[in-house]
Amino acid sequence: MKKSIHTFTQGDLHILLDVNSGAVHLIDGMTQDILQVFEGGNDQAVLNALSGHYDRGDVTEALEELHQLMDQGLLFAPELSLPDVFRQKPVVKSLCLHVAHDCNLRCGYCFAGTGAFGHQRGLMDATVGKKAIDFLIEHGGDRRYAEIDFFGGEPLLNMETVRAVTDYSRQRGQETGKIFRLTLTTNAVLLDDATIQYLNDNDISVVLSLDGRRQTHDRMRPRTGGAGSFDECVQNITKLVQSRNDQNYYVRGTFTAWNLDFAADVLAMADLGFTRLSVEPVVAKGAAYGIESRHLPELFRQYDLLTEEYLRRKEQGVGFDFFHFNVDINNGPCVAKRLSGCGAGHEYFAVTPDGDLYPCHQFVGRDGFCVGSVFDGIQRPEIGQRFRDADVLTKEACRSCWAKFYCSGGCHANADLFHGRLDQPYEIGCELQRKRLECAIYIQAKLALTREK
Image (cartoon, rainbow, N blue to C red; front, side, top):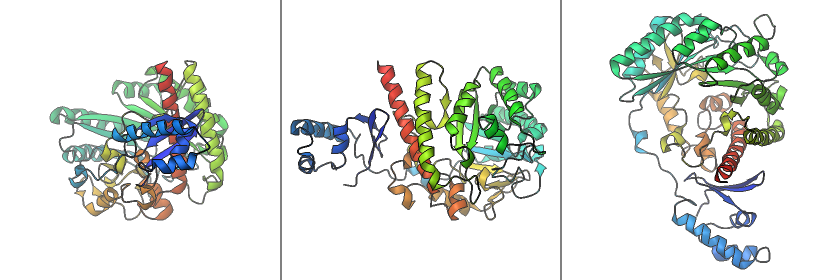
């Protein structure tokens, strides 16, 4: 039997994850040692291997409990197979509208080339945005919910189109029964009172960019003239967060090799009163600020520090939400989601200001990845099929990875950037994902134990 489990120690807990079922079990050190040998039916080999280390009766009792978990399908669960939904025509669920291929900041790590995505700067006309709504309705099947993310560049540079598309989505929603969920991603510099009121009145979720401490933020997120943007961003984000009672937003940052102590940046944002946080590692090839393998030990240490402080603040009643620690250890995602992740290229597309369709926002501008347009529909379905076929059951590096059903094989754009192919994940991203997941599972286990007391 090929073992499909992962055991690890985090903080004061020994934890067992059954990969295929997603079941999480708290175990003791002896059971963790047993599982280094136990494969489901080799009890005698376990007893022989641990003879002299543990009492034979204790080992026998632990083996009986492991067999009970096997009988319940919670240990050594069978491998998952491709669900029938993968054989059906995909349904488009969401679009990322690049309403502005321009930006008022010049972020050093910007994958979008400071907003232009490697091409001319420009704004999306409302006609293109409305046609994108029609495209989403036409290709959304019977799905009731549809999602739109206003993106850039900086989308607040084109509020005229944001307003027009928002109104049109409400109109078309009433006509078709679709419910449109809207999100806007912004650097917050142009987030004035009127815009905040509009976003609130129209129930538009907001993702706000902030990198943490002043020195961290201003180093990588300057204005076009080189001045820092920290003060205005914090002021405007604070107004928005307070105006919606700390709901319906995320403050998202990026850490680089220049702030490996990123836990301090997360906590600095929490200290500013922002309780819904996400901080991501920069993905850069050949850049001085890029994350390299030699940085991993320190980054792992930072995740450990953040984990303990996260729990401490939770216990004190001043906790915050950290995106990467939000793991459901009781009810995992559906099989299709576990296998394919974000759905880029078949369930999710990015729309350029001219109406061209790309598999996701990070592929915009990359040669060979335009799949069609909102006017002409999907013209190159074979590209979407490549994304659909790149699931964790087909990726060699993923098949033996315990974390595959949480990360769903990682980001396709990162794989393409580093390897020029979709089926070979970005290795540093994998390492960080595994560490984050161990911390997240530990946190959820600790919180569950606290609730049981």
